[in-house]
Length: 557
Image (cartoon, rainbow, N blue to C red; front, side):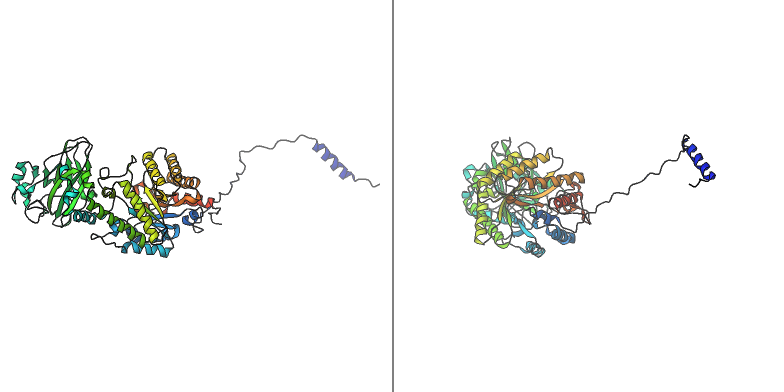
């Protein structure tokens, strides 16, 4: 055995001794250890080129559409691009309405609507028909001309003389008279007497008519030239027709005020409450329900425009007498039938708004008494309900005649916030087999209390009719884009949850860009904004929601 060298032995012993000594702690320092900063999270970028809202909604059985007007289409090229990319259906805001199609002579003119329809066809989008029957935007000049012609020579059949509360008899005076008119009590007040007189210049009937001359524009306020009639006796709670024949030196508006029933009630043709006057004698009227008064007088303002006004045969009489006019009823019914058949034949649409906004907030059918600003078709039928029945009968018959099968909708607003209206609306739809679709406009306001619950309740009631269910004119007033986005998603979510696939008629936004909305840009109601048509938060949230429903990754890979 070899001996270990002494030097190595000594080193080994020393190492053993040192290993048994206590270890001194390391000296502390103020230096902090290095902080490891994780990399920033990867922000996923949405890829809007993968798909579009229309395609995503269609995968859920929903026709997604938007409304637009000819003016928007021609002035904003972005409109056509967005409509083509994002929507499967289009609705014309105004171009298929009565006053856009029917000319003053009664002919149907389709050229503007045809340009838009041709674009829709070329873009591969379906066209929705809006609207066949509505109390607003009528060609009133033509309709009033029909009434005038129908009742010419048959006035006693239209107006029951025994029921007339009173009339203005100009024939007791002489041409040029003004002060005698005032003194007699025929008119209780005339402003600008030098400009209000009687004339034998082509009266409507008899030998004289009233003339109010502002042709030189001397009167800058509408009341500076006016004539106020004597008072007519009336009964509280009863509806009266205020009627007269009028013409002007050129087409112009006129204002009328109704006195004796509380505060003065103003009516104006510029507000669509009766027809604009023209150079030919036309029958003008509006229906007024007396609230508490016992007599009414009428003030005609002859300085609304720089023209000369002529008035004749001014009367107030119970509206029941007017509704008994068979010649006028037949003329209006034929005009309505011609319009419905002409529209159904001419346009290839997948559905029609047959009747629009026919109920009041309290659930009554509209009448001339509760809708004085419009031309209520039902005035010339047995009732407004009879007119609605007739509208659906004509639409169904025309569709069958021309080999078409559109869904026939009844459409109204405030169904979410007016339970009485919604009940009347749903009851009517349920009991008319020709109604194949129900549509809620859903012009909503985010400030409405319990809006989500009201939307849900309305959708359930619409589904219970058994008809196709459509959201026809969706927009949402708001002051917060995030809240708007959340509510838009909720509406789509509830529509898909509540409306069975077989009853999904679709959802249409009433416009595209906030700046073009009928409720004003300040209400921020739609999915795009600004001159560059920037996508809003509501668009982004809806896109992500629909992508998730359809199992599509919305982000860039």
